[in-house]
Length: 142
Image (cartoon, rainbow, N blue to C red; front, top):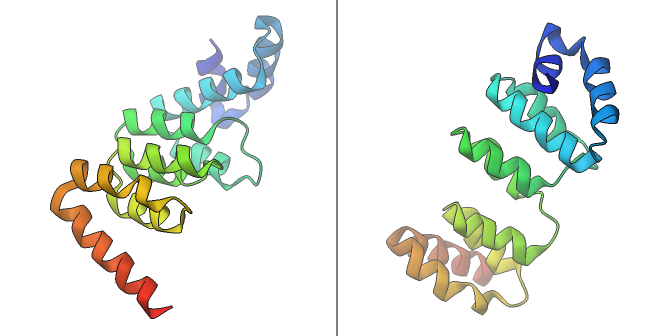
């Protein structure tokens, strides 16, 4: 019912969804993760992109990224993972979901980049080596 209310009539039934949230005693994080799931299920990617455009996300960017990845939307997933505040969590998510170029870029901005390079090389192979070479060249230019 929550998903139906959230995704039909261009969100005009959103008030019903909010009432259900209150009746079901869902906290904001759970409610908004459910909304992301139902938006994804209904191919309403513009709603998820609106969430990602917010300065303060209504739920965990990692959760948004994982949901979108599950629906095959890699670019939206990557955009969500890049919004994760904790640098270690962000890098690990990018590695886990094989966003190699961004994982390398984030690792090279991290104070403990050497903690990530071996894992990146082991899991990403030749493509990661290419991105590492590019990152090293860019550091040398600075």
